[in-house]
Amino acid sequence: MTQFYKVTALMIAVLAVSSSDALAFGRSSGGGGSTVPSTHPCSVAPRAQTDGTVRFELSAMNQFTESQKEKLREAAAVAERVINSDEFRDKVINFTYNGEKHFVSTDLSNEQVYDTLLAAKETYTGNTDSVAQLCLNIYTPPFYKKWSVVGYTTPGQPDIYMNSYYFNSFDATEVAGNMVHEWTHKLGFDHDYNRTARRPYSVPYAIGAMVGELADLAH
Image (cartoon, rainbow, N blue to C red; front, side, top):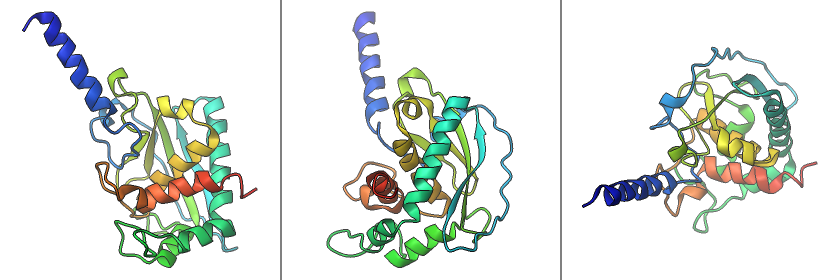
C-alpha cells in the first residue's frame, strides 16, 4: 500500500472512531481526561433547603469566559425551574419503558427516582440538602475528538466536564439538559456505556431530555 493510501485509511479510521458516539454524554474521563487542565478544588458543603424544592448552585465555573458563565447561570435557572415544576414530577412518576413504569439501569421506583432528585443527595457527600452543587469545567478536546462526547464526569468526585465545541453550539436549554444528565451521575445513576436501544430510558438520558422538553412549559 502506498504512503498516500496508508494516510487516507488512517484518517478514515480516526473519523469513524470519533463520530461513533458523537452525541453521547459520558460518565468517566475515558480518553479525553488528559486534555482537561487542572482545576481549582471545588468545596462542596451542605446548604439545606427547607421549602421542599431543589436549588441549583454553581459552586465552580472553571475555565469559562464571562459570556459562557452567563449561559451557565441561565442553564442552571432552567434546570431549577423545570425540576421544581409539577409537569416534571408527573413526567418522572409516569415514565415508562416497555409499557412498565420504570427507568432502566436502576432498581429504584419512579417515585424513588423523583425523591432522589429532589433530595440532591450526591454520593460523594451523602448530603440530603436539596441543593445541586455543580462543579463545572470546560475543556477543548483534540480536533479529531471534538464531537466525541458532550461532557463527562468521574463517579465519586464533584467535577463535571463540558466539551467546549458542544457548549458553544448549545443554547441554555441544551446546556441545562447536559448539566442535569451529568449531575444525575453524582446521585448514583448510570447508563449503558455504548449506544443501546434502552440507553435513552436510563435516568441520566431520560431526565436530561425531560429538562429540554419542559423548559418552555415551566415558566
